[in-house]
Amino acid sequence: MDFFKELFSKKKNNPREKIPVKKDYHENLDRIKEILAGTDDVVYREFKVGKQQKMHFATIFIDGLADKDLLNESVLKSLMLLSRMAELDLHSLREKVYEVIRDAALSVSDMREVEEINEAVDNILSGETLLIFDNWEKIVVIATKKWPSRGVTEPSTETVIRGAQEGFTETMRMNTALIRRRIRDPKLCIKQMQIGRRSKTDVAVIYIEEIVNKAVLKMVKERLDYIDIDNIMESGYIEQLIEDEWRSPFPQIQHSQRPDVVAAALYEGRVVILVDNTPFALIAPATITALLQSPEDYYERFFIASAIRLLRYFSLGTALLLPAIYIAITSYHPGMLPTSLALYVAGSRNNVPFPAFIEAFIMEGAIELLREAGIRLPAPIGATIGIVGGLVLGQAAVEAGIVSPLMVIVVALTAMAAYSTPSYSFAIAFRLLRFMLMAAAAFLGLYGVMLALLMILTHLCNLKSFGVPYLSPYAASSTTFNDFKDSFIKVSLRFMQKRPQYLHREDSTRLKKNPIEPAGEEDEDEQK
Figure 1 (cartoon, rainbow, N blue to C red):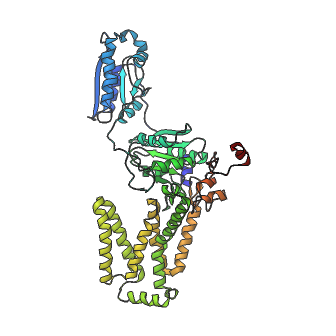
Figure 2 (tube, one colour):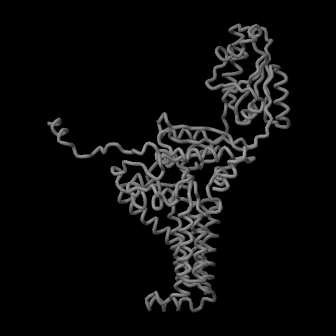
Figure 3 (cartoon, rainbow, N blue to C red):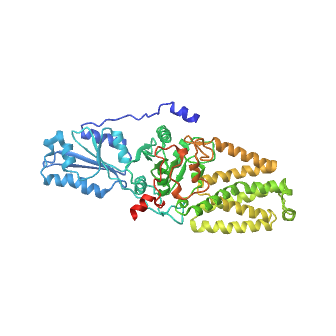
């Protein structure tokens, strides 16, 4: 937090000079050409308009970013042809030429005015079209964005059996539409800004006015306002620049590719950040319960969702502790095992030339290498490499006497448990901490494992995400019994009337009336 205190005490630097629009048509056009000099994909279309052809006009747009069909039909055709057919004498209406064009010539739905050349150039680079003409100290911006983009497809990083099969795309406006489909609330606010001195990346802050946590919303806006960087290539840039503790291995902002997950977070009172050119939305604040939840938990019956959640928590502990416990027991505490199992472990490791830590480190490193190779390779080949490579490598390592058969089982169970975590970033943090626990077990046995666990737990207790404790609701002062209804287990939806209290939202009521509550005596009388 000291970093943000120091940052907010400084005034944001914005050295760009403001260049006002002049009345002279040629001066404005020359200035834009000077700024965009060397840019060959900019199209300048100059033409004359009016019955006497005395008014000079020009449209400026980027080839490939603007909709040429809309430009030809609704702008050029209207100004060059229809104005002559209507015998509009624009030259004699020089003082009211914009009003005439806006009300009688242009058949476009979205247009506005700008008074600075810099702002006009930014709009060109965003895919809009500029319309400039004589005797007017403003430039008309016409919405003509239309760039190549992929359609809505199933999200590859968050697959589900039951639920929506559509994910975000790289176009921010399409992503906001997917959210609007799920939240038809006039209080849904979408505040747009641009971040990046050179990239001018569109960023949208989304929240529901009557539900959002005001303190979190204020923090998000302040931290976004003070980002001063030349480019934003992906939402990960913003995530790293606005998180509370940059030295922590744990993600403090949740990211998702699913519109239903984002909509559910908005209904809980959290804030969503959408970044253009990326299909991943950022959700703040993030808690350990949110990172371990899956969308399917809310689409299935409560006892199925609770059982899967408990299995997920057990898998998380297995992925973190199993190799370390194996090292500690085989190296320091073999007496904890039954006699027959202890003898088998000792016999299987009889020909292994390495201590348990080196043995586990080799196998865990090989699994991580296979995992990374499987991600980078094409999908059909990557799956084959992961399965076949793991089997062949494990069998060859056992036959060569490098590792014991039990170590192969431990590594396989650890890898499967790690895959059960819904959040990829959260799983990576535990994969890294696993090696720290393995080193602690190699030096101090189970005592070292407990010390390392206490260090991790202490860090998690002190960690916050935009002022909200990371371990909420387990370690939050404002936690109520109602918050535990959607934690490591999930109760029936009919008992989840209130939203989580630790997020401090204004409207805390989610479910006002249970549709299948027993009818009262008055209702029974009315029915009779």
